[in-house]
Length: 112
Image (tube, one colour):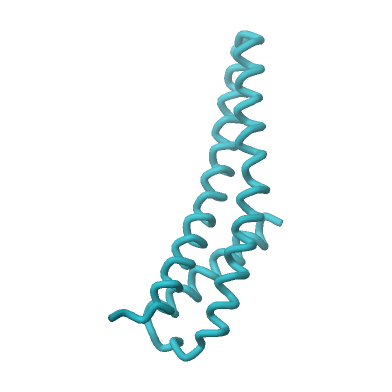
């Protein structure tokens, strides 16, 4: 039977990885939608259409702090798990978790 600690580590790693990607996705979406807004504005877009486009941008922008908060919580939880399960340090899952944790810390530090 598989070690439940490894299973828990895999789950936490997946959560941190997904949230890290989510932040990048929302930031790219904001950039893309801002470019679309500027094109419509420059092209003399309809006032209602421009207003709706601005709402889309703000909704995406509002998701970034929430995603960062959730990533911070998940990262801290995973960090504690790694500290508590140091005897698993030689496993591939542990090494992968450390790599993902480092990526998450870099994303949070760069976008602070």
